[in-house]
Amino acid sequence: MSTPENRSQWQALADSIAINGSAFIAGEYVESQSKATFDCISPIDGKVLAKVASCDEADANIAVSNARATFESGVWANLPPVKRKQVMIRFADLLEEHVDELALLETLDMGKPIQYSRAVDVAGAARSIRWSGEAIDKIYDEIAPTAHNEIGMITREPVGVVAAIVPWNFPLLMACWKLGPALATGNSVVLKPSEKSPLTAIRMAELAIEAGIPKGVLNVLPGFGHTVGRALALHMDVDTLVFTGSTKIAKQLMVYAGESNMKRVWLEAGGKSPNIVFNDAPDLKKAAQAAACAIAFNQGEVCTAGSRLLVEAGVKDELIGLIAEELQAWQPGHPLDPNTTSGAVVDKQQLDNVLGYIQSGKDEGAALNFGGRQVMQDSGGVYVEPTIFSGVDNKMTIAREEIFGPVLSVITFDGMQQAIEIANDSIYGLAAGVWTADISKAHKTAKALRSGMVWINHYDGGDMTAPFGGYKQSGNGRDKSLHAFDKYTEIKATWIALD
Ligand code: NAD
Ligand code: MN
Image (cartoon, rainbow, N blue to C red; front, side, top):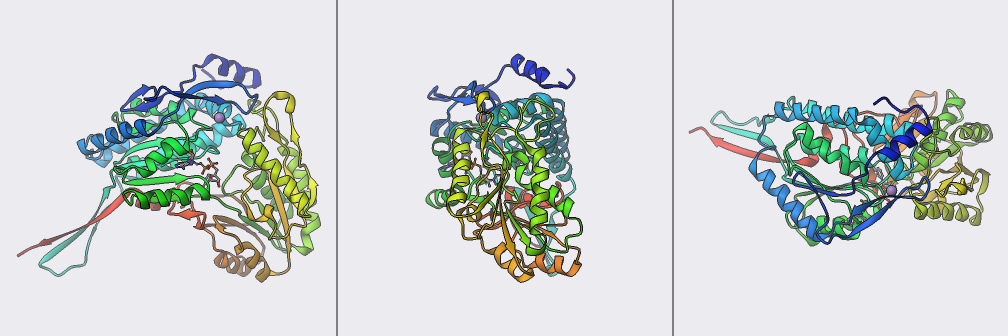
C-alpha cells in the first residue's frame, strides 16, 4: 500500500488496522498471566486504542527464564557474526517496509506528528538495527603483549540476558538503540516499553521473528514500571539492565540492582541542556531556528531539548524576537496531518506537569514572552503551545527541573566564563549547544562543559557513528556507536601457557 498523503487517508489506515496489545514471550503473543489489561489511550483525541496486557512479576519470571534458556542454547549467541548480521539487516529492512504502520501506531499512541514518526522514529530505529548488525562481523578481539611462552587472549562475550526498560518519547527508537547492540552481540532481551506507548514494541516483536531472530531472543512485556519494570530490575537472573527514562527512576534501578544480583545497570536519564548563544554567533537567524526546534520538536519531550537558552546580553532581544517568529511554525496541529510539526503531549498527566511548570515560571517572576496556554481542547486530546520565558534566573524551578514540554527558559549572561558557570550549574550533563564565530572560544567552551554531547553552531546533530549519553545525573554509558557494545559484553582474559 502506498503512503497516505493526507489526514483523512491516515485516519482511514488507522481505522483499518487491528491493534495488538499482547505480551510477546518465546515467539508467541500471549496474555499476561493475571489476564489483567490496561487501556491504551490516544492523546490525540482521548479515545481508547486497545486493551494492553498488564504484565507483572509472574510474566517477568517466564520471559526471563525463556530468554535464559534461549541464550544458553546458543541458537543466537553462537551463530557466526556474519549470520547474525544478515538477520539484523533483514530485521531493519522489515521495519522500513512497515514504516507506515509502525509510524501510525507511534503517532496514535503518543501523539507525535506522523511526518516525524516516519522520518525520525521508524527510520532511526531501522538504522540502529542495521548499523549494529553491519558492525558485528567487523570487530576483532585482542591479544595481550605477553612474553613469548604465553598467550593472553582478551575476548568479548555477550552478557546473557538483558532487560531493557524504555520511555515513551521515542518509543521504538529508544528500544532499537538498545536492541541493535544487544542483539548484534548475541544476547537475549526482555524489553519493557512504557505503559504510555507500548504499541510499536509489541508489533515489532513479530517482525523480529519474521526476520529470523530465534524465538525467545526478543521478548516484550508491556505493563507498569512499579510492577513488571521493578520485577525485571530486581530479577536474580537478569545480567544487564539498560534504561532510558527519568533520573528519578534511574536512581531507583541502581538500588534494585544493589538489592538483588548486582546486575550491570546502564542509564540514559534526564537533561536540562544549555544552548549558549554568544554575541558573535555567526548567523542569529540560524541560531533562532535551531533554538526553536530544540525546544518545540517532539512537543519538547526530548531528553536533549535545549531547554535553557543562555544568551549573551548584546543579542538577547533580537534572538528572542527571532525565536518567537520561528515558533509560529511549531504551533500544535492534528498529528495525522502530514504538515503538522507539533502534535499532542503524551497524556493528560504530562500536560498537567507542563502547565504546572508554566505556572511556576510566572509565580517565580520570569517574563512570559510567548505561548503558555493549552490549546485544541475541542479535539478531546491534550495540546500545549510552545512557550518562551525570559528573565529567567538559573535558580528558578523552570531552569533547574526537566519540564519535558515545549517551554524555553531564557537566561542572560555576560562573557564566556559566566556562560560556562551557568551552563554547568545543573544536576544534569546531557547535551549543550555553543554558537560563536570565534573558534578558540568555541573550543574552550566545549571543553569546559560537563556534558556528554556538545554541538557547535548547530543543535541536536549526530548519527549512529557517535556515542549518545550524559555526564552527572544524566546517566552513564552510551547508546549508539561501537561504544554502546561495551554495555552488552563482558571482557574475558584467557591465559595460555605454552610450555
Ligand atoms: P520514566 O523514568 O518515568 O519511565 C521510563 C520507564 O521506566 C518506563 O518504561 C516506566 O514504566 C519504567 N519505570 C517506571 N518506574 C519504574 C520502576 N520503579 N522500576 C522499573 N521501571 C520503572 O520516564 P518517562 O517519563 O517514560 O520518560 C521521560 C524521561 O526519559 C525524561 O526524564 C527524559 O529525559 C528521559 N529520556 C532520556 C533519554 C536519554 O537518552 N538520555 C532519552 C529519552 C528520554
Ligand atoms: Mn499512549
